[in-house]
Image (cartoon, rainbow, N blue to C red; front, side):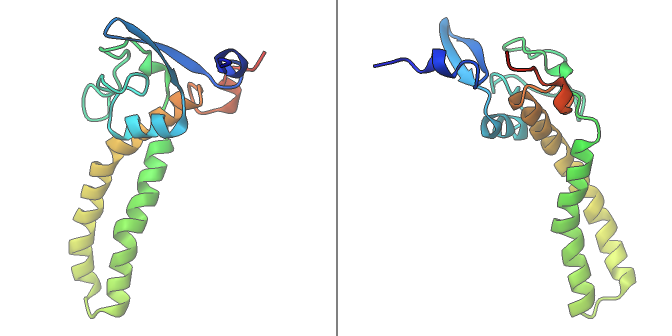
Length: 151
């Protein structure tokens, strides 16, 4: 049986992991990075914490030593949080005002705390997923010019 690793090495980036004395190769795939990031875990090992607080990214993973501080999230997580909250919370509130007999004042009293709570709840998970996506694409800031070029 032919080992495909040397053939696929230039195409698929890989990271060498040391797990309990064993060496393993982990592919930097987008689903893996998103899953680990949405769990707010280190995208490289999936075990260490990604955040030191609410949104403060740990510079290095305490478990595997991956440099998570190099992935700049900037405005991407905020944009997607607003997009998701707008569809999950705001759209049903508009539908309730159109199809129901609720006054706009009642919708404001209910809607503003719901939007605020949903935004604060979703933001750390979406930021983790964004960092996982940057890890999977090997791009420190999300700009294609920052991605390593193929030889």
